Amino acid sequence: MKIYNTLTRQKEEFVPIEEGKVRMYVCGPTVYNYIHIGNARPMIVFDTVRRYFEYKGYEVNYVSNFTDVDDKIIKAAIEEGTDAQTISQRYIAECKKDMEAMNIKPATYNPLATQEIDGMIRMISTLIEKGHAYAAEDGTVYFRTRSFDEYGKLSHKKLDDLQAGHREIKVTGDSTKEDDFDFVLWKPKKEGEPFWKSPWCDGRPGWHIECSVMAKHYLGDEIDIHAGGEDLIFPHHENEIAQSECCNDKTFARYWMHNGFLNIDNKKMSKSLGNFFTVREIGEKYDLQVLRFFMLSAHYRSPLNFSAELMEASKNGLDRILTAVERVKEKAEKAAGEMTAEEQKIIDEEMTALVRKYEEAMEDDFNTADAVSAIFELVKLMNTAVTDETSKAFDRALLEEVERLCDILGIITEKKEELLDADIEALIEKRQAARKAKDFALADQIRDELAAKGILLKDTREGVKWTKA
Image (cartoon, rainbow, N blue to C red; front, side, top):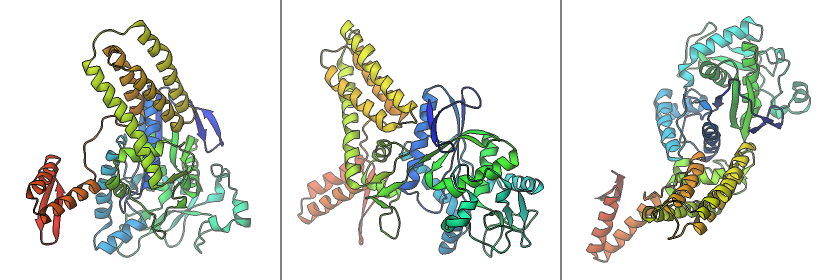
């Protein structure tokens, strides 16, 4: 199995630290609001990587954190007149709902930064003892960046080059630092902010130290795979390497995987452009299985463009698979008999070749686009080979293979009857029109239809309100 390693900029054969086991850390979201579709891409991609490892028989220790102390969380808490913990706990719960809807398997561990403060203080103390960090007079602790000779090995940036001509990516200057490139490990509290006691001051950790400590706690000093979006390569992952390797005197991660950016209608996603979408908003228009299928229809390292047209294409593509599975399930229920020699030949040759094509795609740096292509070919074979005359054993063999390969991608092959928010609103409008036309029989029929699907209506002065039972 080959993985493109950002560290070496080439595909490398995957060799685990411990045979048969994978230690994998994926940077999770900062929980101050609903997750957006940019957050969803690494969640879906690396969940799929994990699933494939498990399919190949590996035991995967999959750790993905929640950053639950951060300036954005504190800002949201102040705006609401509440505390940071209330905000973070609310959006962790909402994030987990979205992840479940995208069929993302629960992580082995979902550590919270605020529960790992003791470990952060220990790691910072070790870095100070070894001369890699220092405390300023105000209690801020900085990492001495130039003390790590290999700084820049992941992003392939050299400090001298940054000094000379790339001021825009230089760490913000501060008069209490020894060097402009030194970054914060611990910072003093501000009025109204959450804080913890430390040997240097009452305060809170810097962002970079959080992931280093959580990876060390749950996976050990050296891990197999560290993953996240490519926007994290510099400075976040670069800084993680520096502080982890200086503290532990070991290679931090053997393989670094990064997914490409997600654009909206060929533009960078941003609130100011009005093209910022949360997963929850997409879920009002589409089953989130469509979003997952869309994300896996391109190679994870490629930039991915999100648009209504591409989502519709993904919806249609996914529906092709689900319709074929449903048809063959019905055929298999009615079919009987053992596999014929001709059917066995199709299984041994055509089906086996397509499974091999799928596995080769996944083992070539998790090329899910080609893996999806192999599933479509398998669906085409299923559509042409399964007839009223084929045996139950043959029908089941093809069906189970399609379901198994889809499951590795996290694609649920069972059609859902669940109504989307837009469908509910459309039926409510139809009911309102029926009532206006005094067609009360139709209005009652629509109400009963919605009730049967768990949607309860309440007529109020402000209009019709609905809730899910």
